Length: 318
Image (cartoon, one colour):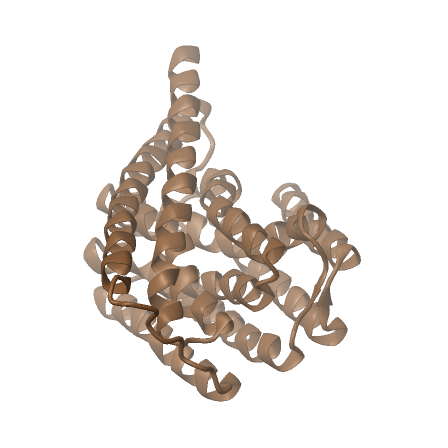
């Protein structure tokens, strides 16, 4: 028993390490394509980087649902939203630097993030079908289109420097493709380790996914966004943090269900459903704080970390 748990923990750590490294490389090399198209930093974060840093959740969704473990899918996706909006954003203020945000952009993106999360929870509670999963996935580009229209600004497209640029981008494409494969392999290891830990410790898979796995699969956001902030790419960072949550609530939670529909909230629903609903409340608090204050600093960071910590208290009082 003990050896099995130790092995599961070793696999979990190794899988998370691979996920983090591969996701970081995939995003780094993918951004070169988008930036060449003259897309704003905010939209790069929303459209591209958010997908890249959400690859662990997307891969986990497919692997979990194919194994009939819908609670791992839902727990990881919703738990990642709570983790990214509160803990990751809070830690960034201490590990990076404070920065200002544009209130209108945050409000617009935030409204769609909360809307996407509410829709995802409603679908999960009513029971996933392939049609519902498909509609949730389709809602992602629709939300992005509306957000782009509401926050659009003129962006100057970069010119090609020379004829060697094509080969340069081909190199980035190959590295990104290999990195995506690494993400998929890491996801398989992480999901299997969660199943082993759940069986070995007798803890519901939803709770392990909501708290432990969500932190692991949110590490790419922490790494990428911290790097972006240190490079003063603040819009890219905030676009990725909130954008990743939109991806989690639409693509990540649904892609596995689209391919392998499976039951969710079948373990401890009296505890897991309130935790999922709390993710909505936490998102509203964070978006409201950012919109009112117009900046991300250590005061906001403390608030966000406290909001995250409340989830652990709810685990024992509900």
